[in-house]
Image 1: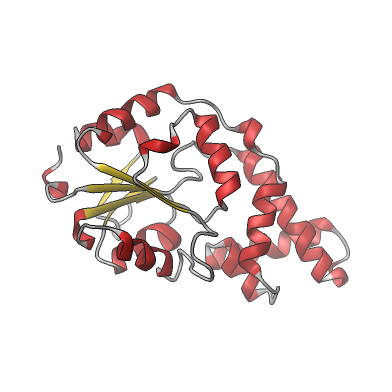
Image 2: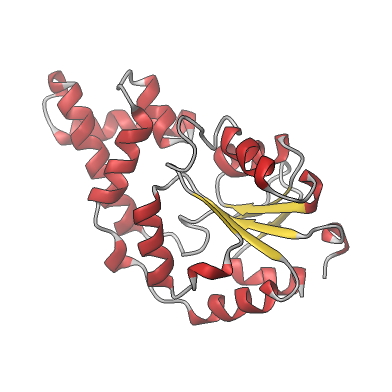
Length: 218
């Protein structure tokens, strides 16, 4: 076990591109769905390509799908994101991961586990099942539609989760792949953080792939 996480009693995970690896085709399908919705609201863009370019340009700045849609002045951006994630039909692109399943089962013997994702519950449950993870392994499940109006990026989802947890904020660690929607909001609420990806200064620890959690917590 890494001494940095000696106090940890609950380990939390983002879902998309954290519990399963990034997949370019998944991103393509989701962003094409988003572009369709943008075009519906902004028909003056003319075509899907222009709508997609508008989204991509703004996403680079805001690093959040729902926030990007909000900045583009679309109504109910969180609901639009949930619908796009559901309509993108990406479940068949997610692969079963028996190695991760074994690691999580081992970690579960020592820690409580929780899932906190901005994705809607129905889609998330299908993804978790496709990976091969038993949903019952998580002590708490927080989806994008669990707390009305709550969001990851402004930390309100993390605030609401901590109200339900029996542990202190610094007894939790949260693992995710996005600085603005995973690391910064979790850290702002007193949680320890692990970033999945390249080295960043904002996280307490960084890992290259999700399997490294075995060495950190066992």
